[in-house]
Amino acid sequence: MKIMPCPLNGPRNINEFVYGGEVKAMPDHKNCSDKAWAEYVFYSDNTIKIVKEWWFHSASGYWFIAERHTASDEIIRTYDPSEIYKERVTFDTDTSDADTRKANAIDAKSGDGKGAQP
Image 1 (spheres, rainbow, N blue to C red):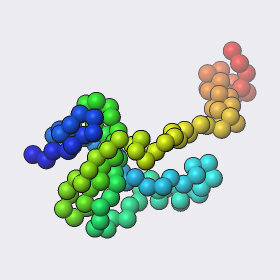
Image 2: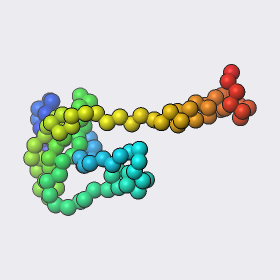
Image 3: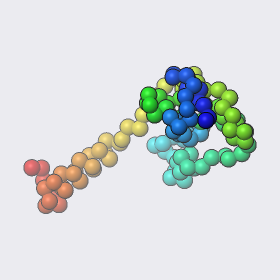
């Protein structure tokens, strides 16, 4: 049985965790191309080295970072994200997008396609 050292809950069975992807610099989500965003979300370097990865402890709902060697699968260390991230990133929707969604919802509810409010 493989054990993951959770920074919040201590050593736990690896089955309690969900892999969340590599920790890497995020492009500006408001101004990057679709290709740049897809590369950030879906692609990894995939070389033999020590990588920083997001992990989620499903029993406690806790996200943390683990440094793991990709060849040996050895977990070097785990730590709270606050060690490297000092502020939260939010994905606020553009107000014009919200207005469009609201108008579409009204159209769908009224059924007349004119956007008339009930």
